[in-house]
Amino acid sequence: QVQLAESGGGLVQAGGSLKLSCTASGFIFSNYGMGWFRQAPGKEREFVAGIRQNTFTLYYADSVKGRFTISRDNAKNTLYLQMNSLKPNDTAVYYCAASRSGRIWTQQESAFNFWGQGTQVTVSS
Image (tube, rainbow, N blue to C red; front, top):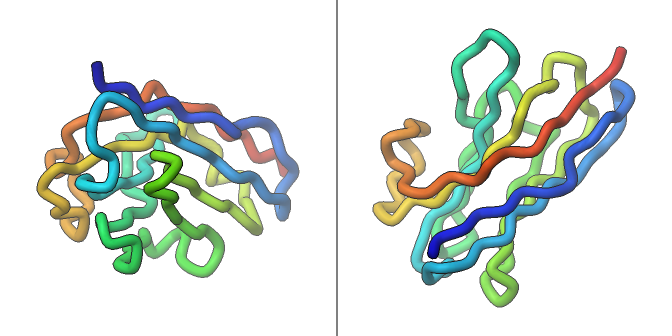
């Protein structure tokens, strides 16, 4: 059974940091590209960051470049998102997702096969 479990969300003040984790099980993690998406209230889910299977190729949405860092530990089947200099408009439910095709550069939800349940991140001003 495929599972993606996010953790690390919470409430933080603007300018603060959080680190999200996503633990994967039920599939061969190292064979999948991985990504983070987020959905703010009343908005569509959007791509945040992605990482190819090789761990070296990274993609970021323009809105988070220079502030967020995606990484993965294939030995631990875990994906991370380090979020620094958080802003109120980063408030959203953050989801991790797995892509068998690895077409992460498309930044499209359709490129991802499996999804987690999400973790809430709230940034206060």
